[in-house]
Image (tube, helix red, strand yellow):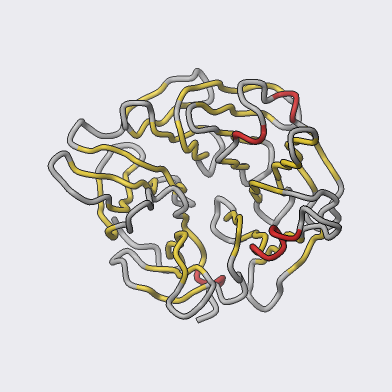
Amino acid sequence: MTEREHLVFIGSRFAPGTNSPYAFNATGSIVGFLGKVDQPYVRAVSLDGDWIAWIPVGDWMVSSGIERPTVRFMSNPCCVQPLRLDVYRVSNIAISSDPRYLAIVVTEGSVNQQILVLHPETGQVEQELTELVQRFSPIQIERLGISLDGRVLTVGSREAFIVIDVPSRKHLLHSEGRFPSLSPKGDAVASVDAKGNLTVTDLVGGRSRRLMNASWTTYGVGAWSPDGQFILAGLRAALGFFIYLAAVHSTTGEVAKIKRLDEGDFGQHCAWINRTLLSS
């Protein structure tokens, strides 16, 4: 895998001595951290790696009371934009490029559970899509994704996922699998099937293909590279003891190891980000 000069990777781990996620390069070395992203409870990176959105854990903890949570988003550490949400509890978020759209999952007890698409600068609700996700309730959602232009939304539980065309409110795909990851063009979804295979499913026609042979088991799927050539995934070799974060070629299935993952980390939180998002 050829490292893109302007891109690095981010996972779920905090940089030593900070409450901010760290970034690393293709050799697994730490190259900086998101200094403005303080202890995020939920966070999302746009598919081009240019925008990051998050809700600090402090906001999430108090959001069950009078205070409402605030989503913060940025494309540069010098300019963090806040958005106070008109809801109490958010369990998942996703952000498009520019950013034009912000998708959230609202889980306020067992009554007010919603899937909303908002305008990130005004908070205006563009779409309410809850009724389109009937295979599982919002409280079961563990993965939310949105295309660069905000037209395609992926919603996934531990066992299945749905892909929705937002403007037309139509289903593009229903499938078994975990950790759905939308391609940058919004035309394919990578996921882990029940047998631990990394698969890619085309949204037009629904053709599904397995990327690697049985010598690898996939535990988690992160983001595609912005050019669509590679998919980040947590893999374990057939005779291996550890799970490694790897970049898998989206066409050939060629595997390039990046770093060994910590216990309990399956690589599902890993994404490609622009170096301009780093504070140091």
